[in-house]
Image (tube, rainbow, N blue to C red; front, side, top):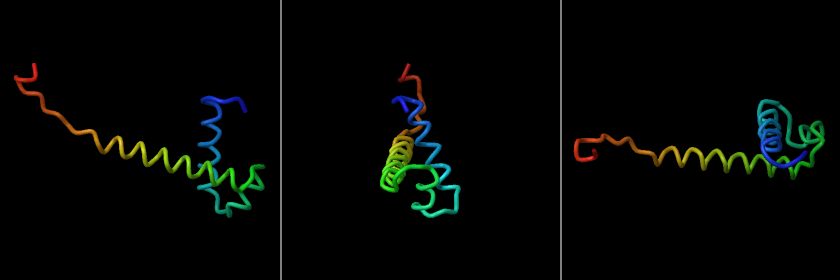
Length: 70
């Protein structure tokens, strides 16, 4: 894999497939050809990104611009 967007797509796809599977981490990692520790790292990374995205969205407040804003 070369770095960049392609790698991030790979990580997202791998984690998504793991979450949809009904396999243990060990079984899924073996089938995917990655160490369990790497799968765990990717899962933590995706969880962290998800919580960061949700937190940034929750900080956005609607603004009603009155004449004083113009």
